[in-house]
Image (cartoon, rainbow, N blue to C red; front, side):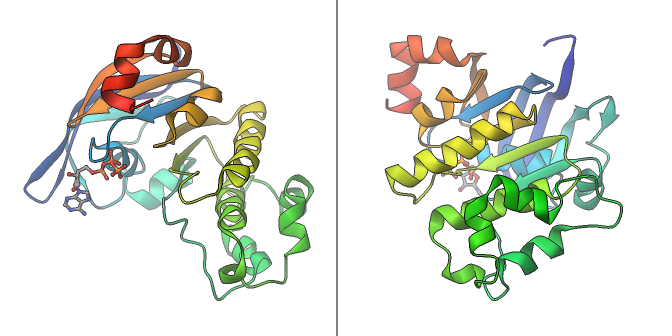
Length: 237
Ligand code: ATP
């Protein structure tokens, strides 16, 4: 644990029905840090993010989650979102039949202090060019951009990115990496769950590796890159 933690995850346990998935996970993130949450398929990374975002499922049975001095473990998803938690899920959840701009408008909530639509367009010119295009017609990379932009339109304290590079060609991964880099430079505290560990670690300060619902390593991103055994056993890199 660190004593200046911004997000503090303390011994959380989470279940899908009878399936015990997250089995006592703890880690801390300081404000503005980027953390890679890594591990093999099925290790429980997505389930951990969903638990932190307080989605209805999985159910949190034990443990505490604190964000900027506020408890999240007592909240429901909409309350966590109001407290500044934004999860960009693996399937991105943009609304295909609406235009880029309509997707962004929907993300603007009363009294929000996130990015305005103009700010989104300034930072993601590609979205500005496609503002009147239906989201379903965007490329995978553009859809990921839109999903991130939508999260940033809300007042945000922590951003969770679930497999942002999945299904994208390497050249597009580089583009999304640039965006994640911009987000980091803006000082937004971020957790990245990613199979592409090398790409995630490049942009991360710290890393947590999970296996079968537990944390098996926690340290700096560099420590992971320097540790051949860890890389081989859990990351296949
Ligand atoms: P991946 O990269 O494959 O998504 P992950 O580390 O994110 O891996 P999770 O998606 O968190 O892993 O899945 C952890 C375990 O929980 C897996 O065994 C999975 O089958 C199970 N699981 C995931 N979603 C559900 C669900 N809705 N109901 C029951 N079990 C689930």
